Image 1: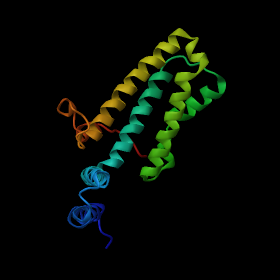
Image 2 (image 1 turned 120 degrees about the horizontal axis):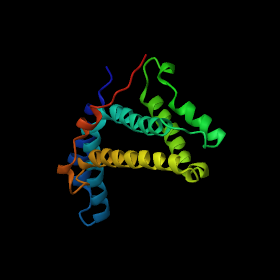
Image 3 (image 1 turned 60 degrees about the horizontal axis):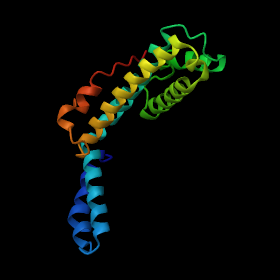
Length: 181
């Protein structure tokens, strides 16, 4: 039986804390600091590794929502190649996956992110007031949601002074709705 990720991380953390860190020269502040950062990062991974799949689905959902909001109105002013890319991005792509792997989800999210970036910077969007307003409103929503998601992810490391004002990562990813036909 292959050891679980949690067991493997636990063993690495124990080795770092019980063997490696005590063997460090106390005068070597940089090595000590780096070892503590490694322990902190590994603890975060140990606590959250089982949520990374759902985090990837949540990111995909955010970009899908952004592109759907943009395409809910007239997009005829968008350059033809970008319009085709946009139509492809919002098409139901889940049918190509029988059981989507995390890498598949991340690749699709990356594609949607690139399409969103191209759309936000497209000259045709800047020159069409209605389209520009719709894209910018959707982009503000996307940026807000991504920011909250990132902050929740990093809060476990103590990297957010206002972590108590955030929903938990579990609460954020619980709303992931993805259909696999």
